Amino acid sequence: MFGISWAEFLVIVLVGVLVIPARMWPDVAKFLARIVSFIRNMIWKISDASERLKQQIDLEKPIDEILRTTTDDVLADFSTPIKNLKKTPKKTIKTKILKKQKGKKEK
Image 1: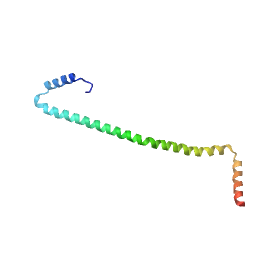
Image 2: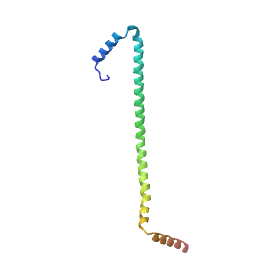
Image 3: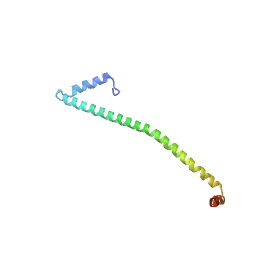
Image 4: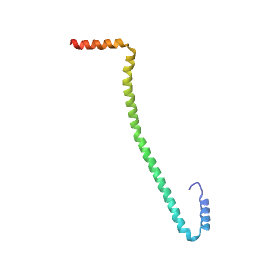
């Protein structure tokens, strides 16, 4: 318990019994009970909060993967045509567009 042995704990209790007068023992017991209760409540709150945080992180992992793959797919789709457009001269693109428009008009 708290890194001390039972023998050390017994010595602390005996010194406390000798130093603290008998009329104050109930008040000391109440005080120690409040401290133990407070520490237990804090431990429960911390463990509960850490468990909620762990669950939230576990829930967000699949969402992060979906967002990452979707973003990668979308960026890959956009980046491919841009690379092709940069390689072709502007006049070639304009002539292709004009040819398509003329073909539509003739039909």
